[in-house]
Amino acid sequence: MSQIETNYVVAQDIFAAKGIDSEQAMATLRQTPISVHCWQIDDLTGFESFDSVLTGGIQATGNAPGKPRSIEEYIEHLREAFSYIPGALKLALHSVYPVTTNKVERNAIAPEDFKFWVDFAKEQKIGLDFNPTYFSHPMAASGLTLTSPEQNIRNYWIEHGIASRRIGEYFGRELGQVCITNHWIGDGSKDYRIDKVGPRKLLIESLDRIFADKIDPRHNLDSVESKLFGIGVESYTPGSHEFYTNYVMSRNNCIICLDTGHYHPTEMVSDKLSSYLAFGSEIMLHVSRGVRWDSDHVLMFDDETRAIMQEIVRANALSRVHIGTDYFDASINRIAATVIGTRNAKKALLYALLQPNKQLRDVEAGGDFTKRLALYEEAKTLPVGLVWDMFCEREGVQGSGWVEALQAKQTAKGSWR
Image 1 (cartoon, one colour):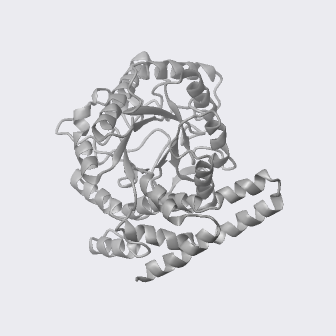
Image 2: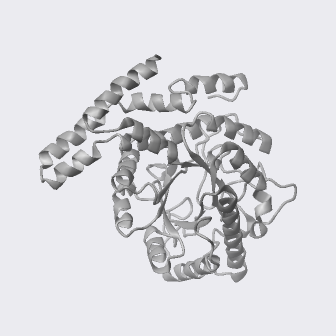
Image 3: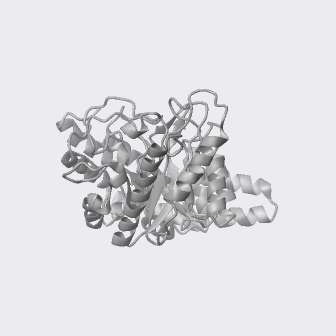
């Protein structure tokens, strides 16, 4: 018996004594996909141009070596990242990652431009999610897309949104699992704005046109994502949390996306989840880490990430919350960053699955809040790490030694820092 197996037997007994089935926890974790965002690998450069510059209030900071210089190198790095991540996965693509020999305008992208990714997903046995790219384009030079006062600009981006939904439908139909097509725009104002209603009415009109055609929800679900502010749009964003909440609840043509880095630092997404789940809502979740004004730091195994996963598990909502990662950091190795954040999301989910949730619920229902707090705090030091090591072993993925293995490969190529 290996040391990992020996450690797991001890941990299994500890959890069993508290009424927690570690085998069931691992089975649930294995079957719950995390959607890995494709853009950490290359700073959201995409395949339109490997020299493109981000616009729309977002940026990837840092100059670590090893950024892919071709599609082939990008795919190699993505495969490397996936090899260190255990359990079910999806890949979230942006529309600027077509694999095609011809340049295609964004409002004319089609399923055939992304056939490579369907073949890749079938090979990897993963699902795909999709994201229209409403930024980093000449037609977004003003900083406005779906809220632009110029009809021709709005039409262009509406056509892009419609085309993106068709690609999402194609992904879902071909792969047999739903694709979430997530819509985020960077529109807004750097300084104080007098007319705040006008752009929001234009956004409603644009979204209504994008979502007008019915698509089988078994193949594609659309989500809309808010942001508090972005670089250059610090004072006003028409696509705010309140706007999209009202849009979703009034339309029934899409679901809400909650990005954990898109709120004020004192707002916790873990506190928002139950309000949506109480109404039977489905949620797209982008798990990121906000640091002061910057929202896209590599995900950590921190209090908020664990609290988010606990809320989902306690609400028995794993089938209604679609979990994805969303961050990009160019100051460290990009492959490692992809792995670190995704493993932390999965580890936090395992942590939530290994909590004495039934016992805590029963104690709370009985009004014994003293015992509730005591049990809640004691549970924090349960040996989750030993179960995680066992999970990695069973999935054929390196446990604690993965970073050394990757470091050795990357150092040989001069791509580690």
